Amino acid sequence: MLFRPFVRPPPACKINATMNAAVLHTLGKPPRYGPFAEPVAGDGEVIVHVHAAALKPVDKQLASGSHYASTHALPTVCGIDGVGHRDDGSRVFFGGPRPPYGAMAERTVVRRVFAFALPDALSDETAAAIMNPGVSAWLTLAARAKLAPGENVLILGATGVAGKLATKIAKLLGAARVVSAGRNHEALSTLHKHGADATIRLDSSDSELSEAFAREAGSSGFQVVIDYLWGQPAEAFLAAITRKEFAAIGSETRYVQVGESAGPTISLPAAVLRSTPLTIMGTAGMPPREALADALQKVMAHAVSGELQIETEQIPLAGIEAAWQRDQHGRRFVVIP
Ligand SMILES: NC(=O)c1ccc[n+]([C@@H]2O[C@H](COP(=O)([O-])OP(=O)(O)OC[C@H]3O[C@@H](n4cnc5c(N)ncnc54)[C@H](OP(=O)(O)O)[C@@H]3O)[C@@H](O)[C@H]2O)c1
Image (cartoon, rainbow, N blue to C red; front, side, top):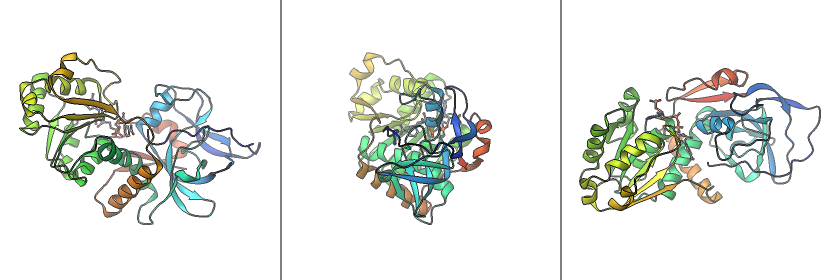
């Protein structure tokens, strides 16, 4: 997770001052639109008047109680990042509101160092939607997987918002070949526009999928795998790389676990780890602020130039409860207070 909630004793709140927010009262239920105490900034903090906040899988995981960073201190406001303006009028992308405050509210409170200036050319809606998955994909590929120009990349879950951005970012970082895998045929057929050199249908039979992984690995293999799915697709890929074609390639595969859209667990046969050079890692840990700021600048620049794109749909803050469980169909909902 890019921004973890920053926990510190809150300064005293103005008892009677309230604003409207997406308030989570019960873990596992959608948040409800309603009044919540106004935030008050403490040392090193700023108030942000929110313009837009994306509704992401992680927001739902946190509210469901299933995320490792879920809070049991309720009520709380949902949303871990967004776009708004500070009291001085400057427009910022912000992350990590101090609990119980969140991004899906009229106002929130964040550490000053996690409010980043935004270029005028980037709209509130696009910035709110693209920064989290885009920066995460950038850091995962560049800093975690240490993708080198000329290496080959496989994206598992490339039809989702994050996977589409990762496909393009892998190309921007100089990948020789990017193979994008997903189960949604319609979305899969558009991935060449995002930079995919080839696609793999994950809804194939086990034997067809194994053949497809081996075929697309070719003679040079995948040096980097970015996995937004885990569950059965991860098991299918890890089973496939025990094939003799992969063993013959010899180069190491750096497999980065990022998301769990297909399931929270896998079964991993010991033979997988003995049969081929493989390192499995996750994206744990907040990046140093400098690395985060650098990735933010890169994603902003490529979003402004139009090389990185995202489909969005506006949701009024008052409609958050109804929108919470709706299928986003590859778009990202952006909550507008
Ligand atoms: N650690 C981080 O920093 C970080 C950052 C971004 C995202 N993530 C995680 O990465 C995951 C994806 O995020 P996202 O923003 O891309 O989500 P998203 O836009 O909701 O997309 C989810 C994708 O997963 C696909 N999917 C679901 N179940 C599947 C299955 N059984 N087999 C194949 N595909 C399946 C969906 O395909 P259909 O269209 O066919 O339903 C959809 O394309 C989430 O778990 C999210 O929390 C983590």
